[in-house]
Amino acid sequence: MARAVKWRPREIGLGGGYASLATGQHVDFGPDLSGFVRNREDAYALAELFSPVSKWSDNNRENARVGNYVDRCYVDFRAFEPNWLQVKFCVEKENIAFLERLQLVANLHDGWLDADAVKWIMEPDEYREPFAVGVINALEDRANIFDNGEEKVIKELGAKLDLSRAAVLRQALRLYQMTQKRFEDGETLHFSGDHERYADFAGLVGKLA
Image 1 (tube, rainbow, N blue to C red):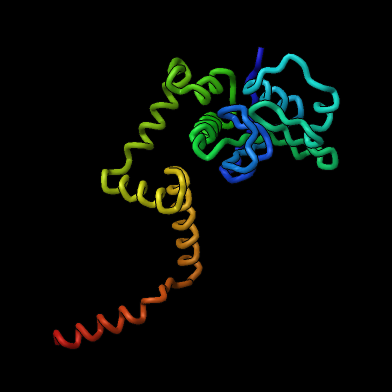
Image 2 (cartoon, helix red, strand yellow; image 1 turned 90 degrees about the vertical axis):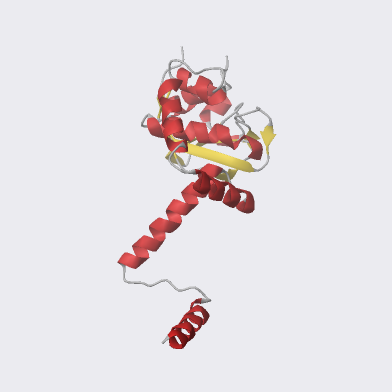
């Protein structure tokens, strides 16, 4: 029986070269999500949660990086870096929601993934109980924090920048965080058109006076 495995996810990025979590088809380049595990036993246990296998090749178990293309995920083990143990997932661009669910579940449960979590990640509409209740509530809470006007802006930015809703919000948070840090360090923010706007405003004030 598959056990729970702790997997510490990074941020969704771009990569590929292995099978899609969503379809099992090879993805040359697309959204990807990787995370660290504690040891090789955990790495292969997690792989089996998403891609049950009856038998492993000893060669592939020894060094997955040499050519172990696991169905629906990839175990990245480097013999020269024994502490570098990752399980990677990638999808086609249109299936990025799979990675977003995977990342959400891992973050909500302190990195722990088990068979119930995997069922919801793979088939959220079919598998709503009992695991999914807390996750669905969390998703709904996050989805309902913006009013219609704010949701429209998020959708428009996503379409313009070719980003998912989650990616738009992540980038906005990073930009705010970076700007706030630079303000705290005593820096100021200027845009290229600030001088012209100031001149126009000063002229208007002069006319009113």
